Image 1 (cartoon, helix red, strand yellow):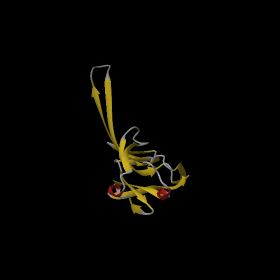
Image 2: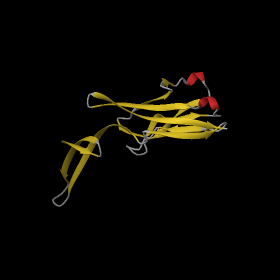
Image 3: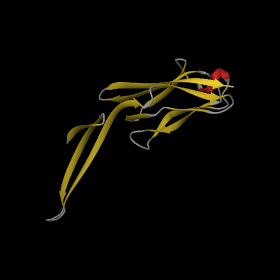
Image 4: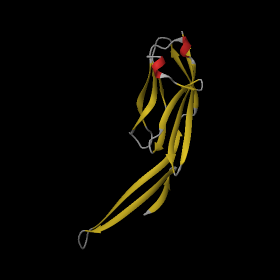
Length: 143
């Protein structure tokens, strides 16, 4: 058993060697890796046409899988207040292909009133402490 760091991951690995015959030795290793959350895009702007659909992705890598909360103007989004707004799973960058709940914010039939600053807050618990990352998007509505 050993600890290994790889691309900002902290991995605990356990290996077992098994002798199957005089000429065949099999070594099996199992690793569990932990990673504090990282968001690919820190802040940017996004322009969308009025009446179209706005899709914002929180591109995150973290293990264990993080908890994601979307904010508008610094306030957590209230999904029950507007039926046009929904949260959908997204795909994590690492571990690759793993679904992350609430990683995608979707607003249907965008209006001029939807222009604002949106932020995804990402948290997880690694090595006895909470870790946080976030990404901010300024949304402009045309037309």
